[in-house]
Image 1 (cartoon, rainbow, N blue to C red):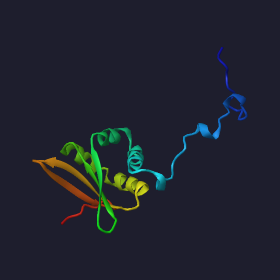
Image 2: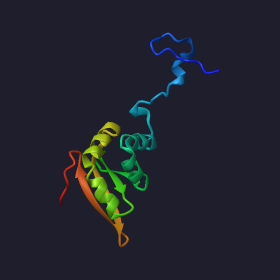
Image 3: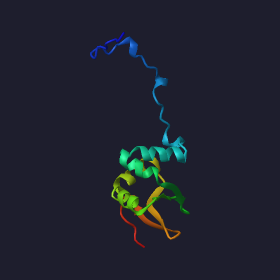
Image 4: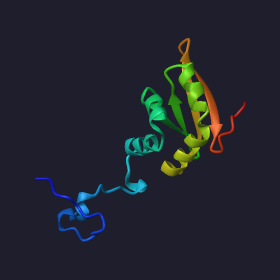
Length: 127
């Protein structure tokens, strides 16, 4: 038998949830790098997440303990599409990592890594 729920009854006895029923979220300080990366990806819309799914990630740390998040794109098309989302990328980096100063969008061409490096403001770094 189908039971109807009164939408105005906030004391419905059949809708009791305990605290452990809710997903507990770890503080960022207790997350592994893999968990931070998963958190980073979750902030994007589904089409961007699909592009990121085909990318590889690594963090390269400098001598001063600051780092660069390198995103290895499978091809130039993905890199160009992600470069249009650089503001979103920097915002998401800032919510996941405090020590990441830069991010790079890279593709492998002729067995060499070709990277475009951006600041936390999304500005292209030129050397």
